[in-house]
Length: 115
Image (tube, rainbow, N blue to C red; front, side, top):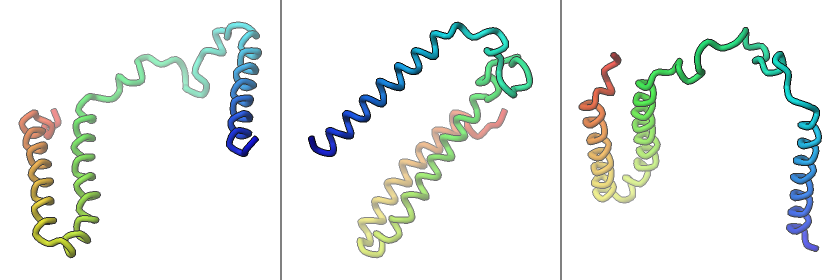
């Protein structure tokens, strides 16, 4: 038996053993009411956890990621620009044009309005 098959056998046996032990522990009975309460949470929650975050944060996050990707693309582009010249300039122009269309669309949809 080679090393890879030994590793696969040990991994499969570990997974089966873990599931078997979990099953044996789960048969101890259902959790009582105090065990179901949040631990160190300060009491029972009044609202759902996702209710705190407004949808407007997601659009701002997507806009931030767009600008971040622009910067991630510009650093290696600066190195390529030295070698390629005009071709690299055209590619960056197309990239910035596509990004600008996205920004104009976001502006039109009201992403920049905070209210």
